[in-house]
Image 1: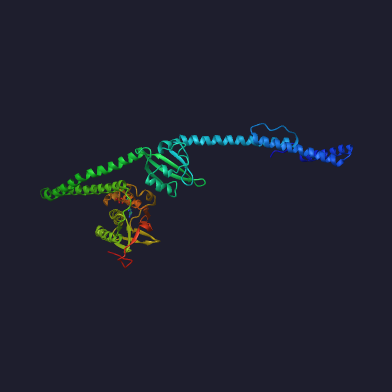
Image 2: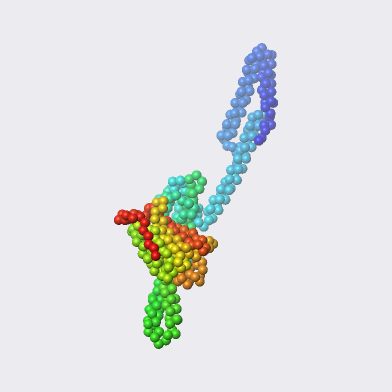
Length: 447
Ligand code: ADP
């Protein structure tokens, strides 16, 4: 803190000296009171004139040098001047920082738009001008939803956002550009909209999907032919050439394996390409699971698993039956494949806290915990040899994950090596529906 160079005792003694001095002059002239009054009035007039100079100085421009004055008023003028200089310096520094931040954001290849609470545009960078077509000054203060009229974007901008949520939409200025748009809340109800050009990535992704779908489709016919031929050969040649039995059996096994692989790849491609909303058809999950339990028993065959269904018979969901069937069957059949003979498999379907929960538990070989995070990746296998022996394609759990993600839900996996595994998921309440014609709440099927 700056100290006044004129200390208060000196100020007070100067005031007293003025009053006493003017009193003495008054005494010489015949009236002490009038003399003191005149002295006080002079002191007041001096103060008033300094106040007027201060007011004029502050009003007329703070860049001017302070008025020259001595004593207390000189200290006040100099003190204010020092504060002003310091503030000016600080403002300059802040302006430089702000300018630097703006230039950095402007140099970003991603579009950045600062939105006020109600979605009004406050500021945007150069890339946003290119990608979103924002024009200065016309678009300042406009609502972003009024300028960027895309149905998905309109819904997205109204939602509550986390930095992880994003949508992929075409650019409003160029349909050929694909943008990934994110909205990040910050500060006091402000939002930062980021738009990134992902056209190349999107094109590559589409090419990859189309390639896999096409090649799988193309492989279907030759595989069917090979399968048919190997069957014909088995029927005709085996009689004359019995040593061809083993090679023919292997051809058939491998062809069937490739056919399963092609079917799974096609299913995955369909799930990726079709991005359609969930059907409003009611899926009779209890019936689907009853059939699955029967099929699982047939698959178990000599392994004599004990397969038990615990199914709430009136609990259905809105969705696509063939997709859900595929997801559930992958989980149930995996339990059969990876549970040693005589083991137990439980299939659950019931309400849990308003949601509908599906779970498959087995007493099988279990999965080491470090494999769990990657288990739903395509072709990821814990034990490649065992999976191949069980006829697995390595795509089952990837299909399950994709199907469930269409319902906005995740596959949960709990497993202990040598003890068994539980694969489960739970459907939100708004997707569940009650089937009215059922009275019982629990049905079970067992071997
Ligand atoms: P696969 O066709 O090889 O079974 P999945 O995608 O269905 O492929 O499963 C991936 C891997 O997860 C399997 O190879 C297997 O190692 C493991 N796995 C899946 N389900 C189970 C289970 N119930 N018990 C033990 N391991 C399992």
